[in-house]
Length: 122
Image 1 (cartoon, rainbow, N blue to C red):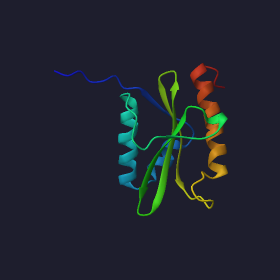
Image 2: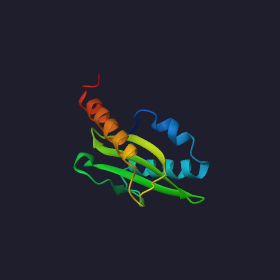
Image 3: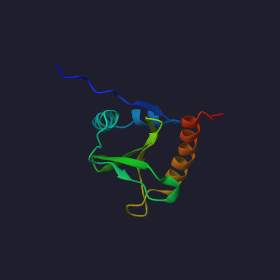
Image 4: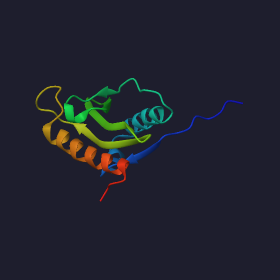
């Protein structure tokens, strides 16, 4: 009998889980499966690294539904925990770039995830 893989823990930072729950069901299911892939050590096909020195190790999962773009942003290299930093519907007015407001929120939540992984969370 095949052994079940050990699942990495998933921690949701801030309102990330609540934000995901308002996405359409097919998008929630897609991200749920992609997060499961991460939990068993696989890399989902839609995972892309975010650019920027301050965002090293941060990736986004991508999905679209009825012409809308959805993103789930995570980091998986901290203490064997997958920290989901942000889930949002992309509304970029500048082409493919992630809006500055979203990037700033991701950076702030990344700091919280790092503090948590180091045991220094206040």
